[in-house]
Length: 312
Image (cartoon, rainbow, N blue to C red; front, side, top):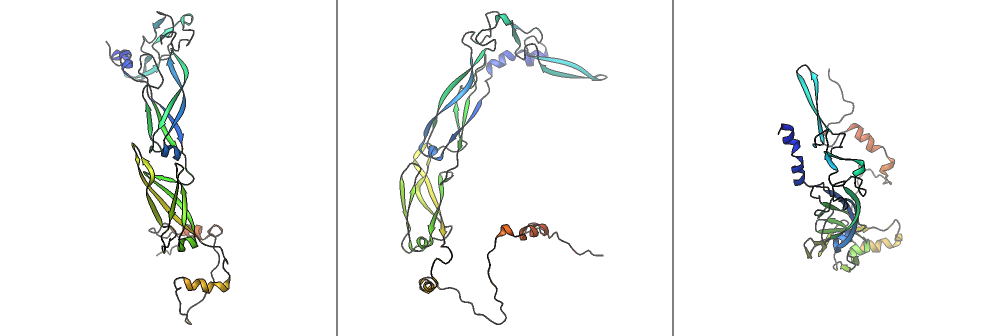
């Protein structure tokens, strides 16, 4: 056996030990699907070995070794690129298109036309378990394309979670934002939360408790189910956004009554060397201050890049 046969002539034995390529499919799921678990059907197009010729491609004895590449599927060409220097090029055999064999047209299988495989539609059921996550893979062993003398590869389903309108997932926890009016933030509230399994939670702020803008509170055991331990759940985290009233919501004559109920404001003692200025509305989108600053400065730790004095 020559060196070429050692690497390519034994390809038939190596092929029988090899597996076909894996096929990857994305499956779109909602956060509700991952919370409750769901079974989805996925339609696949796959190659299956032709039943009529049993993967031979033609009548018995009609398949012969390609005389051009001697069954290797590859051809080697020697090219001289300089005196005493040759280059070996390996290309796919054009006669058999890399198959290593050929079939006379009149002897080809009428079902697969000599291709040995047929394209077939198959529907598989994908069981999405509670607590699975975005990007998680579900393996279907041996459901990939079939090829003669090859073990079929696998079908790998990758979960692709859609964004949710209320909740964001962080591991086993669920995060949500909740708006509360200023009166609720100061005086207390009762709020409802619709869960991903269609229950209703009622949350209540404690008497005398003040909710600040951006405050985080949590409900233990109301997050995502733990994968493979669905009776256990993570934490539901709520971030509160305090909504302040619009301008002039309260008549001026009633402001003293409100002020009397609130913590005292800071008092400033004016002196003659102080200047009083007027606050006005500011819209960054209509100002060029930011662009001008970036043109003259780098980041906070970098040097200014504006005009500098030269030293002689």
